[in-house]
Amino acid sequence: MINKILRVVTVLPGILFVVIGVGWVVDPASAATGVGMPLLEGVGRSTQIGDLGSFFLTMGLLILVGVTTLERVWFYPPMMLLGLAAIFRIVAWLVHGAALAGSMIAVEIIVTALLYVSTIRLCEKRSA
Image (spheres, rainbow, N blue to C red):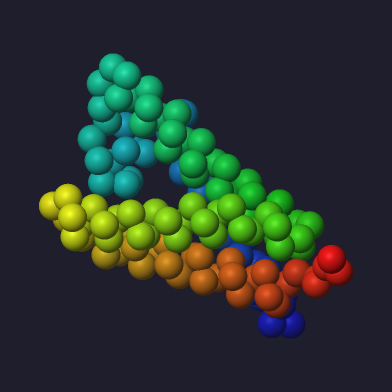
């Protein structure tokens, strides 16, 4: 029963990230506002839409594949992306004068932890 609940809870950020990723393609101005940034111009806009759209869409799809296949390897890339994003946000705050994005860091750490727990609880142990 707990594993079924964990599976449902793990699907939720996967779906959310897919929606955010698609949002960068269909409504980039709203997507930018949603992550606290202006929509840039020129090549900056291309980079914003391309990089952030692919970041969120890939993360979401990998989580959904992981929940579907229950193979832990699919969870590792989104865990790395989210964990590193949290670390880089902290570095941006400490070293580069950025505002501390506490709520975003919290979400990244919580989802990373959720994915880690999912790899332990949901995924079969594979023999080497």
